[in-house]
Image (tube, rainbow, N blue to C red; front, side, top):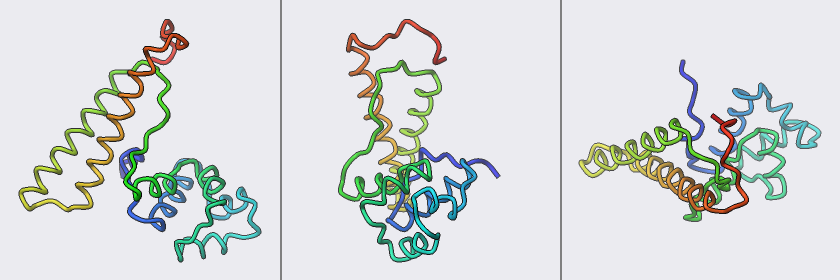
Amino acid sequence: MPKRNWKRIQPTGLNHAMELCLEYARERHNRSVDRVAEGMGMANKWTLYKWMESGSLPARMIRPFEDQCGIDFVSRYLATSAGKLVIDVPTGKKARVGDIAELQELLNAATGQLIKFWRGNGDAGETLTAIQSGMEALALHRGQVEKSQQPEFDFGGDDEH
């Protein structure tokens, strides 16, 4: 079974976002629900399960939950459900060939989904996910290009390649 590309996944609801966070914690960090709950300072995992079932994760627990899981699907869902794009803070580092290839792949996937959708063969949810992923990736590259023009960044080294 191939590994999931976690960068392409978009949560569809708060419960889904929490499930994705826990799956990521298990797959990438070998953390069980017990370990996540313990890392959040909770007495047991049952409260976490209750929050997942009801979709009522308290706002003050979002960051500890995401920190323990190692990914920010809940924050991303909250922002995108409000119609916002979510990108990592641009650092100004040079893009590698793989970064550009990944961008092109995301944009091609979004275009392909749009073609399928408007022909009547595509799912609206999948189309929106593909468009969101492509727009976020493009916005990140835009920010990287803007930041690269600032003199405080050192682009002389090749240590990142």
